[in-house]
Length: 443
Ligand code: TTP
Ligand code: MG
Ligand code: MG
Image (cartoon, rainbow, N blue to C red; front, side):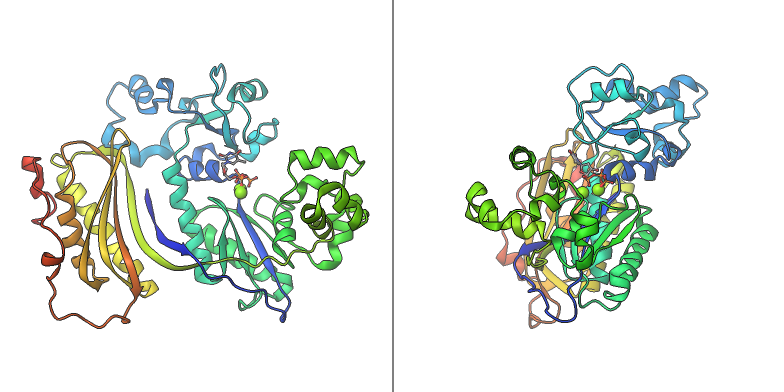
């Protein structure tokens, strides 16, 4: 599994455009964590699957397979490549679950049984004992999160991150962004994300963020809904007030105590009444929201401050025993970061590595150069130096390469001395890991 993507500093804000018509999209991935899992276990498609809880002893799939097939058909080495072949009946079921774990999400098949996010696993076990239970793997979801967002910004650059599986996108000035109210561009983005990742998402396009966020839920999963101002009365007003992003359970209880159930009922209240009862700013906001008014801009992040690539191994690797494999992965990560930098037109002068050990402890090391680079070999060489400063006697779960202190390529004059970093940086500290220290540096 690979992860990559630029890191951004907060900054630039885009102001809403008066003309052409403002079209804002909200895109949300469908059953996100579960869909990421189904990419590696396609045999579970269409089945009730829930994601939650920690890794349990009884979830040891390889152990179960080896016990069932003692002829040595299933080995640790080939396991990662054969996940799609694991028979469905080997997957752990939720039945009999005891503990306090909660569900992060469930497939749409599981939702038919009334299972959903934030529900206790024990309750879910009662609703649908045959549901398959998989543990969470945040690194995997972060990887796909970065992938789908990169695809979006390649097509429509004004994107605001709203968490792991959703974004706002300003369609207003994007070619095709106005066609069919945004449907054409929404369809293109859906297709590009699906082609690249195999994941589906739902998109709502509307005059502003508030309405777009509601619209993206109208046709889940894998749907598109287009909302115009004129749709307010028929489409939005019949909805419960809770559908407005910003009206939480408490505010809803209070609204209900005043006999306000739907957004239409909220819209019918006089603004001064709302202000009297809910305070000046909240009351005014409630009124504006009920009338579908929202001027908030789509806030992009400014220039990336770093770009990185990382990979989580399907089995933990050892610096000496898996040296060739690790060396090859390391080189590939450097090449990928270099390609990312070149594609996006950046160079960096801080080169770093990240390691996560088998006990999940993570370490990072970096080194700064006196000049800027986007060259794979150079990144590899400097990243290799930083590896001397970490413990390589322990098994490694994840390896990452990062280039930071970025500038737009070509904006810094070339330096005469290439290796003056030897002066700028103290030599790597003494390494007491003996035989492993030459790893990666001599190939
Ligand atoms: P959501 O977008 O709310 O849900 P979803 O993507 O699973 O399903 P939908 O098709 O309805 O959009 O959340 C995104 C991910 O965030 C979800 O896959 C898991 C995680 N999450 C939690 O861990 N806990 C929660 O309570 C919720 C709501 C989500
Ligand atoms: Mg989602
Ligand atoms: Mg979401």
